[in-house]
Image 1 (cartoon, one colour):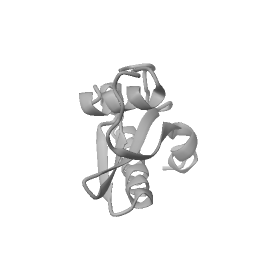
Image 2: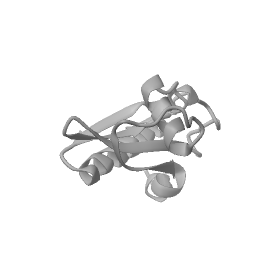
Image 3: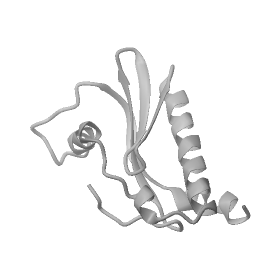
Length: 115
């Protein structure tokens, strides 16, 4: 699902944090980054740090924007659809801690502007 076209200056990522078989997973959908932690908060922190590093690296190397607009794994896209109510027939079977949309330029932009 590609709602918007991410750029090096404007990157918005949907994320989901969920528990499956005793582990907590945090997924950044458009960047295809998955982190695992022993708690939901740890997984989310690791995801946000990984996304920040990913965006910093992309900016430093002036990467093509296709790496910021990757195709989302079908399993995670289905979970997102279920959570957002666009697919009521399919309900997530895992325990979801949180989900949302994060504007990385707003969150990480200040620190990256000086890099």
